[in-house]
Length: 101
Image (tube, rainbow, N blue to C red; front, side):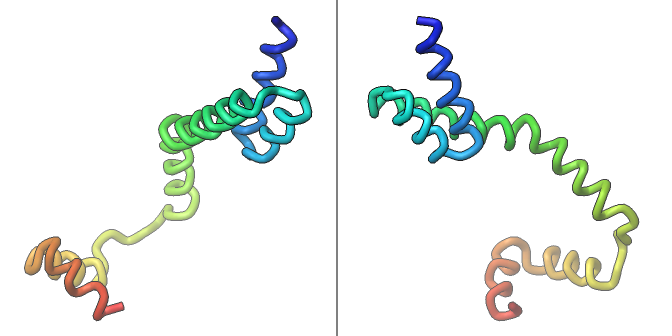
């Protein structure tokens, strides 16, 4: 029982990094296809939840502190964006974006 749990944890953990590695371990351990597929899917979803909700805010803060240190807030370009937003709203910005770009 403990050895099977060890195999399941290896497949789950390796699929958190790359899903095809989890599939390779699952077939290498000769686990049933549905069990391997389930562990790989849950491993991938666990990594998505871990990296987006838990580690995402720390990564975002690091990026802001590293790359956007001395950014001016009130520039001519930013004032123009705000004026367009206040004048036309969300619908106007969505309408004007394709012709401008």
